[in-house]
Length: 112
Length: 116
Image 1 (cartoon, rainbow over the protein chains, first blue to last red):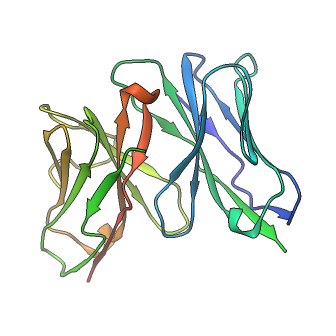
Image 2 (cartoon, rainbow over the protein chains, first blue to last red; image 1 turned 90 degrees about the horizontal axis):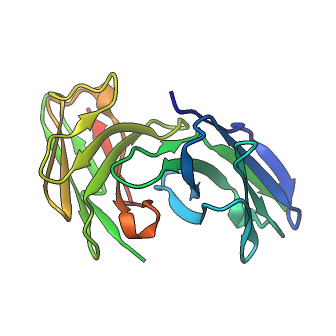
């Protein structure tokens, strides 16, 4: 059974700090990896996706993928209170019809 | 970016009635749509995968006769909660995948169902 694991948190960081969110997955056939942000009472919204080993940066966000170790992480630099949300990691297999697997999400709290 | 809409955004109904929720991909064709349910402070739970023109695939524990899914076109999938009961009250979210974007999922805004 495919599994995606995340620490539920909450992860609490001060404003301006770097928040580090981690995700591990069990299926070595996984090909693409997504980070979604979900505010309370709202649906998830995509922050980033990554499919190659290494780092991918987009503004204050950096996704890091290590397929050998089967983990993917999300770094948020200069954290803001508005970043406080639940962050969901999702893992897909390649091509065709598939079912994405979501982690339970990590709650992030950025305090002023 | 791709937009997915859901209607209604909020619905309150009496126990025993049926409720239909629509999910539309507005600017792309979605061969696959997903239906999720999320209880307060709980994780996203996949209910079923809906493929255009074929029967939906339900996750274990989800009653197919209670949660009817129809994916009649490449831009529309519907979820009907039949004979709703208070325990069906939840946040229902659909998503559509775009194969041209690494199968990224685009989520609808969700439907808050309250069954009295």
